[in-house]
Length: 285
Image (cartoon, rainbow, N blue to C red; front, side, top):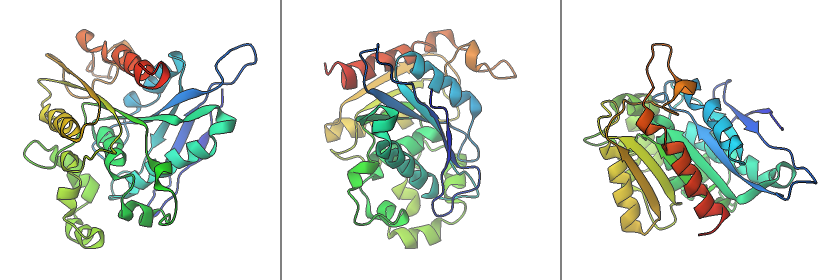
């Protein structure tokens, strides 16, 4: 396994920003020559990255036969679009190493939980935008190198409107909304309300959420799914009738120290995501 850590540094990155790879070796006696890669963005309200939503998920996708990676992105006091640029940089890094890492470069999927879901979805809608290219110093580059091929969004933060998780947006914008609006040329808080940014070039998505989520209301996923539907982008959505926020795998492997995060009926999401990847990217069904 190629298990390496790559420092990530773009404008505004904090010293701990890094990409951790979990790349399976290629063996002559195994017919698989290239594999999809799932890049995991843990949640944490843009104030931290939650370990429960990082490596445990990467290990599950490795067991399914995929490569995986985890991005420890810059959180507050870093502000938008630093984490987004780090994710775009990471996608480009993976594609640049696709041959030696045996990654299928057109099968790179970003997964995000909670605020990490907002980050993953942000790249899905902003990958071709001028402000991101400028931030990365890549105005003249082929911007499709930054585009994920799919998104898995677990109880994602999406909307900055009525159903917003205010803490995430406070951390993401860091009290600099006015200055960011000037530099971006548009209202920053409205820009990061992602249900308003979907278009026909947004990648396909798999989403799941719990109905009673009291931290990030399920309307976040519903709004995004509706926007994908209007844009003609394929999407699969599962809403579970029970379960708190931040479940991760929802089983004992990601049980929190206080006994939180266990919800048996929600554990099916990982196998459903596996089926979605197989049909969308492997079997082509």
